[in-house]
Image (cartoon, rainbow, N blue to C red; front, side, top):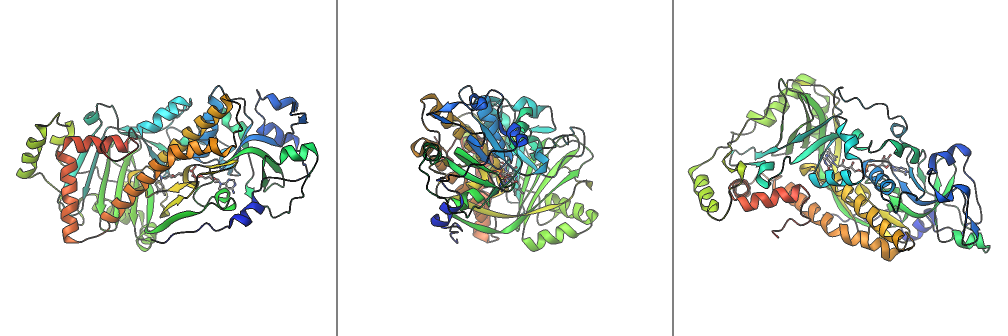
Length: 501
Ligand SMILES: Cc1cc2nc3c(=O)[nH]c(=O)nc-3n(C[C@H](O)[C@H](O)[C@H](O)COP(=O)(O)OP(=O)(O)OC[C@H]3O[C@@H](n4cnc5c(N)ncnc54)[C@H](O)[C@@H]3O)c2cc1C
């Protein structure tokens, strides 16, 4: 375990993303102004605040990064009564954010998809985005099967085990970025730059007022000022680095290959098999398509990326079915265990389900992409005038499809705290206010990162006694109904802690 110190020292950070003491003021060009101003904005007519004219280059919230999580913050703020009037801009130069006519419900699904949990779906409903997502390609699934290559055990989960209709929903990432039509108006197409300019200390009333704002230097040469900067700029967050926030983390000796495959029939179950090199998941994405997330060593990943598509499909089918070891089956000990635990309460519906073989892939229908995997956690999520969300604050192993779900939880919690601040007339960049967001999210995010890291380690070792322990874990999760329900509730985001409560 190698701690990763933040690359920028706090002193450098101060010079880069600074609380401004600058006397310089550059107005945005007319085109940029229209991009970032909100129609219902009270500052639209440059009204006076504290006797000082508020400029067009001033924002309440500057969200750096228009990925799924940054856009969720913007969507939540634009949806809540107390925050919808705030001047919010999403700063991201990704051209896809400005030309959003690429969503085709009936086309071949993208290889970049996410499994969203019921907790995320309820956040999306609250922020008015779920209806929009439902109009695009998506696939709910109510069943899941997890097993490993030794053939010593398997676990099946069903939404019915916890009285729900589904366990999760698989959605293309580009659809999760399309949360609301009018979000496009908030996109400011530039990137945050490190600024090395020395700021002069101002002494006019305007300079003093601006000294309480955060200054952002952008790649288009403009400078914006904001009461609050939200770092939603991914795992290599520029915001985090220039703010000097340290991280802890390590790289996994693994990469994940993702792609879309086709079957002869529809797949309605999420499948995951643990192999010696890492897990392979087959996730339904509608029609006869499934998404593959296959973790392996970086060398194996590059070999699997470059092999012919026929060989790749054969390798996928081997990994999901007949390769490495036998299919698991139930034993008389399992039935004894089931009887023992059914005495202590309601038996979960999936407990009696037998192991099933996943549907075979018949073709590869997308490009294959490989991603290096790492665990990273920011020591702080907030400082004065700044909050980190999503992968800028934490990255986790994708084996349980939780990463962006944690990010959406951050987005909702931060938006709530900003709204509470507005309701009492507080400064939305105030550290004590923002700390409430950190307190709400940190423990849950750390717990999930630890659980996933534990799984990654436990399933990466091919060692006799550990294999037996893993088999026991599969059997326990399959036949001990309270344990099964606890696991499902935690994975669905209904519980913040993995422990029984
Ligand atoms: C193989 C794989 C499979 C996964 N599957 C799942 C899953 O099934 N479920 C799940 O919950 N999670 C999953 N994840 C995790 C998920 O993809 C991430 O958690 C998610 O993408 C993080 O979103 P984000 O918006 O925080 O960051 P990002 O998606 O990294 O977005 C960051 C944005 O910031 C912008 N940006 C960067 N720097 C700057 C700058 N200087 N100025 C302006 N803008 C900037 C970028 O252009 C980008 O748009 C998976 C991850 C991997 C690798």
